[in-house]
Length: 348
Image (tube, rainbow, N blue to C red; front, side):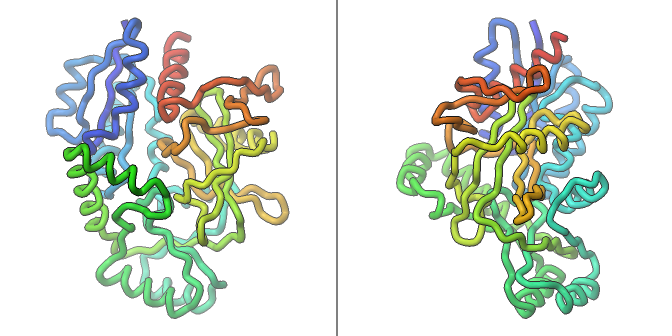
């Protein structure tokens, strides 16, 4: 019987998809939930002696992200167990500063990005940059913390704030995501979840980024591609714009994706053994793909990640050819598929 350790973060509900996936495998797998934010995290791992680690890196605040990555890093080095997502995948998750360095160092095409720790350098940049320019905060999913600054005075004001009182992500429900009444009702009828959600809003709002700024060149676009790789399964769809941004809009385009997308995603994930990754990227007017985000954990508003001729399914590369397989492979937010893949690796 395989023993899995679910490494939960500070959120009491974040790890639940892993529990659902493990329950589906209870004939061949046992699991234990280890709270990586608790003081006795290491002792519990040592006592349990797992065979695999099922991870859930946090992306809400810098404090708990740093804590999770420090402790995950120790376990990765000490135990050297198979894990999904892996430690290397988690390193670039919700760390836009580090991610920009990683893209540059590995020659992966992306919109030009600048990280300034000097207020003077940031002001000099404001004088000569082309507008609009995109500002980002280091931690912020679904487009949170992303601003499109169209004039120099707006950029100057942003820099002043970032180097004085700090900047933070939006914290609160997004009316643009739709189904607002249902979402409110779901929380009201579950007081504990409502309490946790309100706490998350407060923590995110209080998590100030101060002393540095992240800027990215603005790429004209009507949509972003979202491509997902879980093991040898590949999916893709369009994230359509709502207002000025595609990230966080939850408006999807499910027309048949071109095969070149899967070649591209394979080329930037295989060299690093990334097997749990969503890649968001723009397609330039010249047909070049530019990576905007890579996330080992990602949201899923629909039960599927891709439709081909109106059918749910995935692409796999078989004998060097991309083959579409019809089926419901993305259920439970792809956690079932992650676990299936990791167990296959373990069996090999």
